[in-house]
Amino acid sequence: MDSQTPETIRETGVLGRLFRLQAHGTTARTEVIAGITTFLTMVYIIFVNPQILGAAGMDTQAVFVTTCLIAAFGCILMGCLANLPVALAPAMGLNAFFAFGVVSAMGYSWQIGMGAIFWGALGMLLLTVFRIRYWMIANIPLSLRVGITSGIGLFIAMMGLKNIGLVVANPATLVSMGDLTAHSVWLGALGFFIITILASRGIHAAVLISIVVTTLIGWWLGDVTYNGIFSMPPDVTSVLGKVDVAGAFNIGLSGIIFSFMLVNLFDSSGTLIGVTDKAGLADKDGKFPNMQKALYVDSVSSVIGGFIGTSSVTAYIESTSGVSVGGRTGLTAVVVGILFLLVIFLSPLAGMVPAYAVAGALIYVGVLMTSSLARVNWNDLTDAVPAFITAIMMPFSFSITDGIALGFISYSVMKLGTGRWKELNPCVILVALLFVLKFVFVDH
Image (cartoon, rainbow, N blue to C red; front, side, top):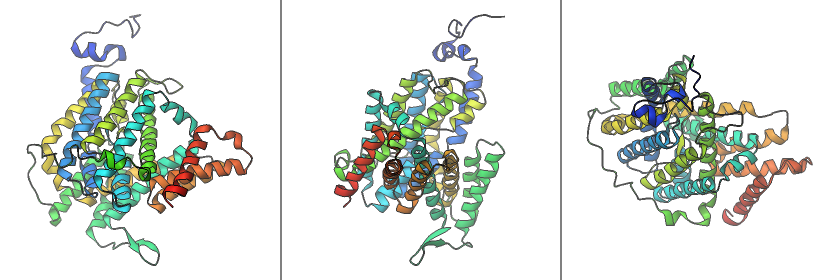
């Protein structure tokens, strides 16, 4: 039996030496299959992200290209620099917050909203550089982290239900059921159930299959115009570098910038730990090889993403699908990145996808994110109340920022009111006070 340790195994071949395939007990063939698997589970973002950002007034064809470019950049950089099987792309949730909350509801231009994304990403990069990113994660209570994740899930699901017309405005009851006979409703519902049924049967490409099926039915019904399959990449000058960095740098947007930073910080860091743990690369404390490099990659990718005209970039939990079929190194992520570059030439397909075809994916993501509420200790009201308030106030106030703010404030009130003030830490107190000041002096 070979007694060599992973550190002493001699790698052969260019890929073997670059990604240390033998040391990780894998092969180039396995890593390529893992990359293709991961790509198929997350490629839906090239259809969903343009639809969501298009609602903010952005050019959907240009967003399609920037989505592919930033995903390719993040994946290839993660693979080459950190050698981890983790794929990156624009974050679900934050794109909806940007389009429907910051732009549509609050009335900011998409250029200023993208500027807020840029500053939030830059803030996360600075937290990474000064090594206080994990300090913040460790000091923000589980109930608040779960409440934030679940609230975003409810927010996204509400957008999906609204987009298919199942939930509509009602002056008497605020919201009510839409017209169930409208084909957008039943096609959106069909797409959702295709995803959930296939996902429950372990089919990795469930979201992609749902989008294809509902789009084909839409084409049959006359909603979709066939424009071909291949073309040269569309022009991106309408969004590239149009971010209003100066316009977003004002006190009125401070809460939004902080929310972008905080949510992306939790989302990406938690996913990195989850994927590396699934791959057997993380220790009991959640630390994994090249951890700091991985944090730099997702932070830098987010900053660049905001600049080129797409939402914050995050590690994708769909990376676990590639890990489940053997992906263990950065070669998996590089394959995903290359595939994102190749699909840039399929832009006509993205332009044919109707809004109801991607709504099922939004509702499904909402289901996945809201399921984390099971982790809350509901027997302890000092934990349950803040988690509940954080989660429900995001869709009810139509603001992720306000949901986060009320969560931190209610957590502090509950701990102080029950005499458990020792459970508060400086991070929570500081954030709660900043949000109180925002409500009093900025939003007043």
